[in-house]
Image (tube, rainbow, N blue to C red; front, side, top):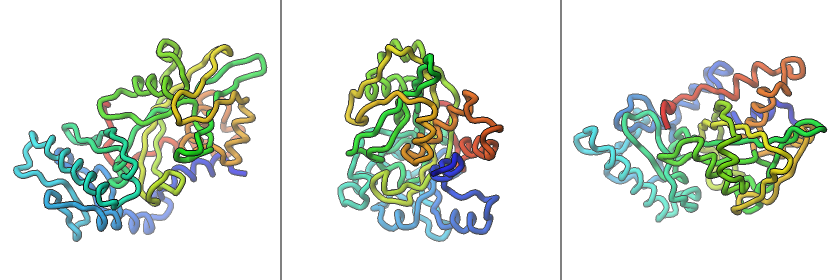
Length: 317
């Protein structure tokens, strides 16, 4: 059985400097810094074997001595951001055509924003883990207050999807370039749970964010070991017993209405997708279900699910 701290460790599994400075420094120094025009700090980490396999072309500077790489646009003028995006797009398309990486074979035709630069930099969603950039998403927990206590709507992921057969948050999805978090959540709620737009807009409430850094494993599909820093915008939605979510797309197999005890049991059995487990721990903390009195690692858990990330974070979406 897994403890709540075990659940955190499974998702936020990138090492911390304070735990082992030497091991942390050795690991980070092995990565290549991904830089873009308009930002002085790196916006991602690229693994050495990714650098070797990526078909960079002449429009990249790949410095093996300083371990950094960036798209090269002649003149480096601010108005060259569109060309910088084009370089990134063309590189990932070449990688897809050459079959360089399994992860880009499932091309999403959806863009993720690289935050930090003064202007808009974005890349194909399926390629984002190759560059180790921060990605952003939304996770919503729908719950019912019944005569028997609080119950949560829990979906089971379809077997053909990543993390197939695992349990999920009621609604979840990635935020595309140009999309606001709440609008993304409204869209995902309709697509995944058949919740009406009016219901979501009138009852869903923003409850902050969680953040963590994961190494991708085989359950995520494609290459393993890729760095994945993430920020999730968290929402709660209290609904009446008459509101029943129904699968609309092929992401979810079914929904079940579970008591808090049933959800906590499934968490301890490792049945939830790792980042969804963190969203539920955050939900339980905010609702006074998980407290310093019943969780000895309470302070550590609260800190770990709000990790400070090593790259620039979004100031606006």
